[in-house]
Image 1 (cartoon, one colour):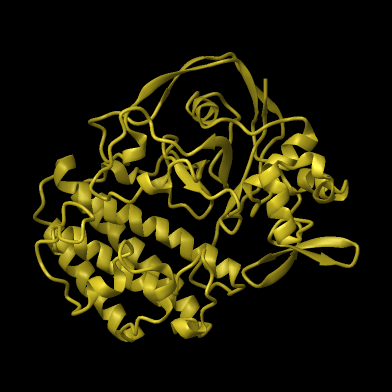
Image 2 (cartoon, helix red, strand yellow):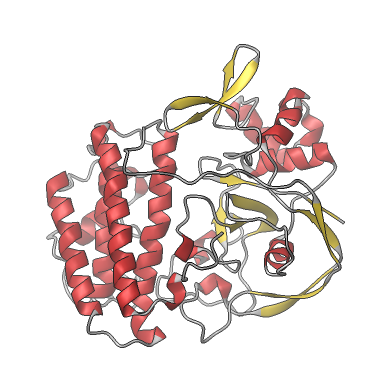
Length: 398
């Protein structure tokens, strides 16, 4: 990861305006890929529980910015906005808390052109308002929230392009993920500080607040598990041996009928992988991606290892010890996503609270995560069966 990239959490107004422009341009570049493939029309988009129609996503991103910045809503409560939307039915179309997921394909949304115009209008008005804002954290909180929200959705849109096999435009160039040296790093244990401190810019509610956690000594992989390593598990029949799989993993595997990760394709006697509609040789030195929690756990049992806890991951990432490499892919941990002591939801009430206990803690970042978003304290979370994201894992042992 590039330590020189400034975090969105502390960006001053001028840099924040530039980042908001950059994020919106990226969103539109991703949307253009869907449009070129004919998937700007929701009727042509597969109805999957793990994605939204791209046209709905486009409108939702602008609506979210309008809600918090132009309409000055202090919370996500439906009656919180002080002003009406620029769109007559904006709330009826794009409020993710009130519009059921299954309905997003049949809402009768405005045309692509109309929603792009809405995006530009909201952004222009937001930047103008930002130019008159104070420079303190309280005044900039909503702007930073809106930027983070668009960055997260941008990565999700990129993952959707990959899932649907849509080629990227020439304007979108992805960084390489070459992997790293495979070795153990030993940590002697002791107290590590988890979470974010007050007074240091934007903080997500599930990171509050920094607190000490006692860890026993452990060893953790310096790099993520590679395609080469995972190929050995596959070749050994790991997907056919129930002793490696948890009860939940066996149930998931029976439903999937899968014998390799999501992006792997059988080509005669060898495996290849699918990326953005292309079939490629397995990049053996790269970290293996598109694995569910269950697949990561099964590999760990086969290898005689385990997944790290999120406290162990944060302790290793924050130790400053040379060799610990993170940021190529999101990483599963063995920790369920639960609140820190004293948790209370922030204004975006649905960000964390609805997902506690049902989701799994995920740490790090991926090659698709903007540098400004990366933080060792950031707590991502996914359902354990998900593998469409840019996600992998590293192993750990005592």
